[in-house]
Image (cartoon, rainbow, N blue to C red; front, side, top):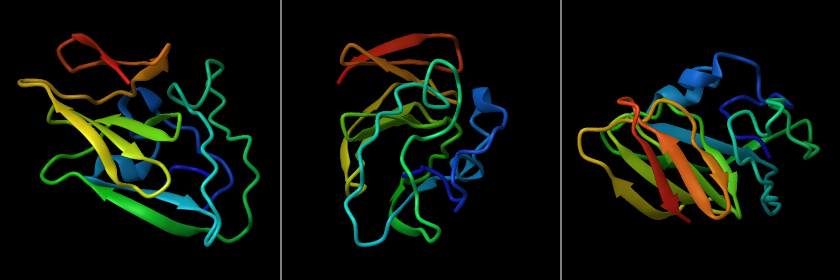
Length: 145
């Protein structure tokens, strides 16, 4: 499984700090591309580019043909950050200060938390059942997951 609007076999290199390395994240919609008619394998991707070595490559073997399994829309708010994944949940902050937790299996929202006068343009990180993310003003937030 890859999180991208591309059908390539790995997530492409790009300017990861701003989230613009994956073109689909600068819009209010992102897609999960996976094997059609098969269950999504919940591979953890706890930091930007997947691991602390920033390889950006999934260990999951993909078929040549991929289909969109679901899409998640955040009304009136763009995603500029990259998502991270742990325990079958996708975590991503939007440019208007809301952190979204989305089920990887079906794209349904699990929860969201709004922070007034904030915005998220860089990926967070997951460790020890916590989601850490810095906002555009330099405030680092820690949410229990």
